[in-house]
Image 1 (cartoon, rainbow, N blue to C red):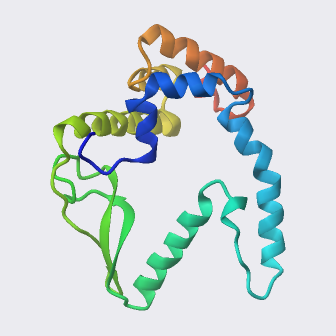
Image 2: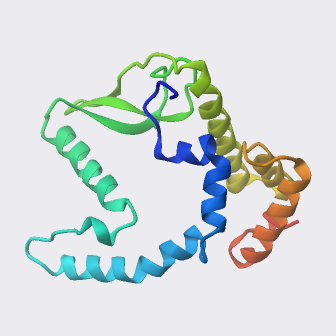
Length: 191
């Protein structure tokens, strides 16, 4: 429908109401679902670490095995001069002309013993670029708030997310999350 290769996370934006209804209908949150399986994942990794030929089971990972395999493939292409193309997250540096150079983007990269070189990409279609740019800006300001910001910076960052309808909602959500995560947050994010 969008005439673009979709990211699996786009369903949360293009089908927001349906995804919210589905998630609200579940007895557990996504975080609870992930945490319920973490012990099994670590046990599997420990068992495989003891094997002479480890075999990781994709069903015993929350998406991480495929990313791990990709990392191995990229390192193999780099160190063994395979001259292959792989998707890699790197600072943009002009690969996507409609995004800032300092933004990290995932694009096809040419990988050989000389390094990783982003392949220039055509601009995103306008009907896709708006959402991607909005999410990129949200991630940027959220990261800046986490690294060096204050509570107010974090609230402003949250307010930039496409799902947050108002500054008041952002403030209520932030205060609720910060209260639950208080032991893990620096004081500058609590004041």
